[in-house]
Every structure is written in structure tokens, then in C-alpha cells.
Image (cartoon, rainbow, N blue to C red; front, side, top):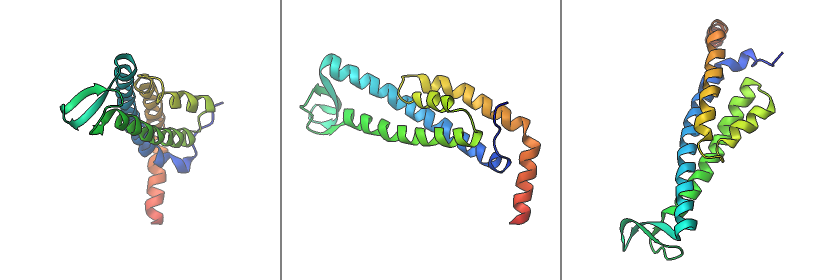
Length: 149
């Protein structure tokens, strides 16, 4: 029988799910931008320059960027959003008490293009189904917490 979330943690699950869904979308978008940037850089030998002599947004030959290097910015932003995505993944995984393979599968969503969009749907559906099935228990826990406050 699979392990169930602890009753005390059920009230934290909706917030963890929202953080996971938002970070999943942002990380997925930046990963797609990063893939496009890598094709431009290594396939065509150009980088994306922001606010340079060529105009507001321009493709310039690699290593000739004189203004803001948007290619590097995309790389850095994706890296930091992936850290947030891993945190959100770990938080949801630990609250739901899922097996480790599920954590790894969700974590791969930030490094395999489009996987974060694909994995997010069944993960959210599973969590929402669990919350709906345990709505009465969640309400009782919330009432008890308010009574103690």
C-alpha cells in the first residue's frame, strides 16, 4: 500500500502544488528559450545581444557581444529557476510521500525540453484528486488549527 501524506501536512499541499505548477511553467519556458539559444549559438555562430550598436535586439557573431549578452542571461535565469523548480519538486514530493523515482522523473522535467509541461499535468491531477478525496479531513484540520490559534 502506498504511503499517504501525514494529516498535519495536508493543509500545506495546495501551496506546494501552486509553487510547483508555477515553477514548472517558468522553468519549461526558459529551457525552450535555452534550446533555441543553443541552436543559434552553436548552429549558426551567433549570440543574442540586447541594446547594442546593432539595435535593441540583435544576433551578433559569437564572442563579439558589446552590450548585454541575452544568451548568457537566458542560461543564468534557467539555472536559477531550475533550482526553484527542484525545491518545489522536493517540497511537493516530500509532503505527498511519493517514492523516490517520482521525484527523479519530475526533476528531469527541468532538463529535458517540454517534459516539465508533460509531467506537470498528471502530477497536478494526482494531487488535486487526493485533496478532493480528503477534503473533509483537511477542513477538520484547518478548524482545529484555528481553534488553537
